[in-house]
Image 1 (cartoon, rainbow, N blue to C red):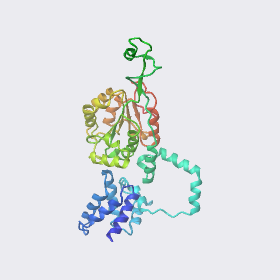
Image 2 (image 1 turned 180 degrees about the horizontal axis):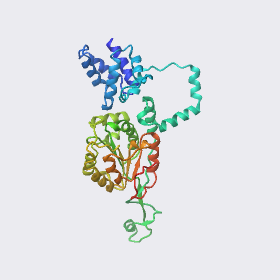
Image 3 (image 1 turned 135 degrees about the horizontal axis):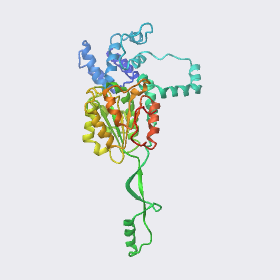
Image 4 (image 1 turned 90 degrees about the horizontal axis):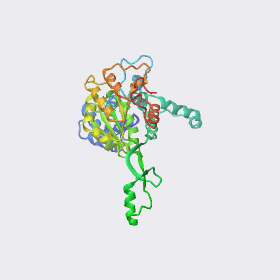
Length: 392
């Protein structure tokens, strides 16, 4: 029956990492009654409209649909032969999500009960797996490893070094004498000054502004970094997050939602250019023109997350980077390409951006995020140094 096939297809999508729930399955069954099930294209369109809620999940859905509905009985063997054949290498690079899809087609093997108990008691194996996850590239993770990485990322905290502001608060042991408060208090005693009111300057973490690239080459990293940014936005105030590809989108309000799934659903509705092209210069120009004065006050720290590959050939990029650098106290560029030992700044975009950043760091695994948290918790280094070579 078509309902049973839809149920098994939904289970396959969930194992591959897509958020498909019972309501989506019911909607898919209802959609099947409105289309011609003899038309493969109509069935695919109906299922995609009811089961895919994010732009980045569309490619994975299309792969799963081609494998599952071509031969439901032999789908496991077909996927295993296509993706895990050791004899001959594939003619081209498999599309993103192929590994997760192949794992979803492969049913988990039954393990002896003694082996499960022995695995739970093996503390050394648990530690080594966790350490391996810390250094694994986000691009190479399976669906289960991505889920575990997201849980690890949500536990990270970001204690930015506090800065003194112009505001003062009353403090009996403060170093400053508050003349206005002293005179106001003397009026209660007929003009006699009995005590001196004191105050202390208020210290608070500076604003944090994140500009994250969501182009095709950065989609996987941006997807996982959003969990890190969601945890930060709900843990502290004065955090502003912007996404850019071919345009700039402010998602600060959406990230404030406590439920991460609800927050990401709202983000998907306001960000139309996920996994598209990249216009870094135009995005920075829009930020400098419309948002810089609003969010870059009081010694703001800016995290720029991008690989620096600009489709416009770095047009206007150096000027906008210079303006952004002068508007903030600290500008840190996070580039996943630094994970390669032989990385050199050869592209026009990277060469235009490097002279205007304070630090150049990698962001490709959990360990690099922990290193970022540690460096942001320390006082900012003095400006004027060369950001290249990259920070450790």
